[in-house]
Image (cartoon, rainbow, N blue to C red; front, side):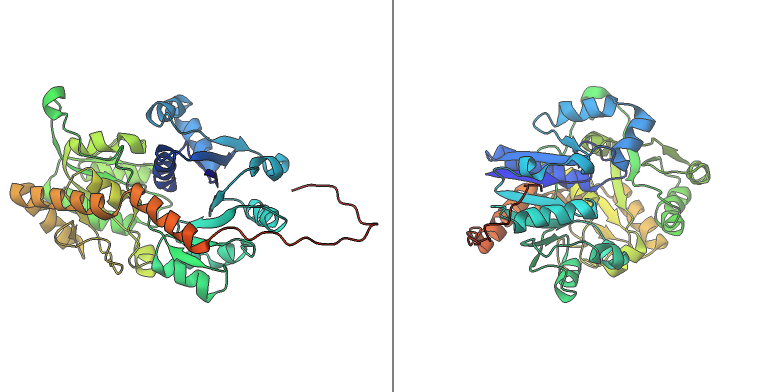
Length: 386
């Protein structure tokens, strides 16, 4: 089958966690013998910021790690859908795609496109920015692949789409797996690593409660990776005794996890409250790498994991401090968490599982209905344009 995908970026994951799952999804489809063509806007903010900070070297690193993947840059003004979508069997349009492009693809499908057309929502904007999501014209789409039940139900309740299915993100276990390199490299093992972005400053209290406070009180050897850290944020990190290592390409995460004893996940409170049951991609990836994980307050309403077995949950800063101390001081607990979390991901939450789910959805939709011929008056002529 020929899959055509539109997304914000495949080649850059700078402040763009959605790229993680999209890469794994494409790799899995290609490994099964399908053709995958990915389009991303030429001047997307993620790639623009990545190149501004690090030049083009990360793009070469991406090409070496994901040698089977590539994307085609497009401009909205010159995008020719009659060419781009020629021969497509399935078209996936990610929700960071511009509203006008989303609408035009739907119109192309309406006007005779012989493919299944799905909108892919892996973000929280259905809850936090209803106006932006309501502005998408999905009237000619077959449905929505939503990252959780809450988002799926919103599409149904608000009439934004004909159909909607829950389709969680997952780990690309081809690249996210335990790495045992410490003995070979002689690297010193750290205690705590946190991979997370500071953002616009709205997470200051959460980061202090779940990261910096416990690091400071336990006097941990900690390292932090991420982007959008202000000078003030860096001062807070260094004051807590943590090292800052900047942006980390997602495919380098397994080696980083291998050099540390425990990692943490800090859900953004408004999103965690509004989207219960929606696991973050970083949880899947950390557990796939076999590192013990302690998460901040998060309600696993959809039962993706088994809290207390796959990972620990801290309802507040004191609990986070206690859990981190227990994991670092109890090797048996650390090993149990790592093994059980890894087993759960491999059993239920890999990109292969999600591709199986995607094909089940496509089978539910069935073949694309044949277009009914339309009789036009002799005097009517059309100039084809997507």
